[in-house]
Amino acid sequence: STIGFGSGTHAKDVLGEVYEYFLGQFASAEGKKGGQFYTPASVVKVLVEVLAPHKGKVYDPCCGSGGMFVQSEKFIESHGGRFGDISIYGQEANPTTWRLVAMNLAIRGMDFNLGKEPADTFHRDQHPDLKADYVLANPPFNISDWGGDRLLDDKRWLYGTPNPSNANYAWLQHILWHLNASGQAGVVLANGSMSSNQNNEGVIRKAMVEADVVEVMVALPPQLFFNTQIPACLWFLTKSKTAHGRDRRGEVLFVDARKLGRMEGRVFRVFDDEDVAKIAGTVHRWRQDGEAENQEPYADVPGFCRAVKLAEIAEHGHVLTPGRYVGAEAVDDDDEAFNEKMERLTAQLAEQMAKGAELDAVIREKLGGLGYAV
Image (tube, rainbow, N blue to C red; front, side, top):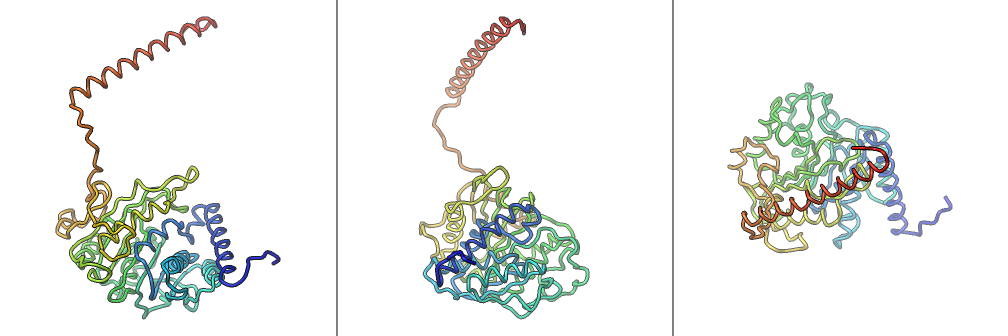
């Protein structure tokens, strides 16, 4: 209680950063358990920078420690907006985590509505009438015991009844239900969600693509998350492809970001600001929404990004894996004729093999001198 954090807004910022730091350290130390309430900051930044939530209602149906909300406020302030330009709505089932997020937001002086109590999002929706401008979510991957058999005729399942033994498509449809007429969403899910055909999942994905609510798909590199080694992806959904930029109807943007990021330690990967900007800038230039720092026209980049028409997606069975669409990375042509290159490389190999033979002879001689014949 004797530590000085300064006063006013600065004090809240410092205390909030300290709290966020310890949340991250705890999640890292706890590994799988810690990841249940904490989404790594670099992943949150990608979601927020792509959605660009300047003002309006922001909802997270599985809000963990509240990282999505905190980063949304940071985005607004860094873009000249006012603290409080967004209204925060969240839900969290775990009572301890529910208190963690309340503390995280209160420390920063943020107003929020987390519902009356910790509760299961599917069975006790704390915001049943909410229509949000933005939804950001990192739901637990591939939940099997979500009670889907008790919600077979739920009004939220506009695109089909979700797999009762996997909640991935329940999350996607719950989120779409809570978007307003021009709302946008960013969702972290397991890679399997992009291609699975089990128990109606392929049918639902097809219906979502044909309804034109899938806007951008991003494949992520491995080892971004504390709690799982399951490869992950980002789904960006929208209720209107004519809002937030040019008319994008009938088109989906695919981004393969698997080669981005750097290792921080032996087991954890992070996105640097340049990586976040590369992903978000690509989306903004494709949308032509004025949010990109670099206003150069969008262009497909082989191996990284490609805009694809719905008809082509249908030809691929409505599989949404970016690697299927972006193609191979361009390789620089060195203009060296094949025969010349083979002669040069063969000579180089012969030289290396000769050097290797010389070293073998030296090693044999030295070992023989020590009485160890080889």
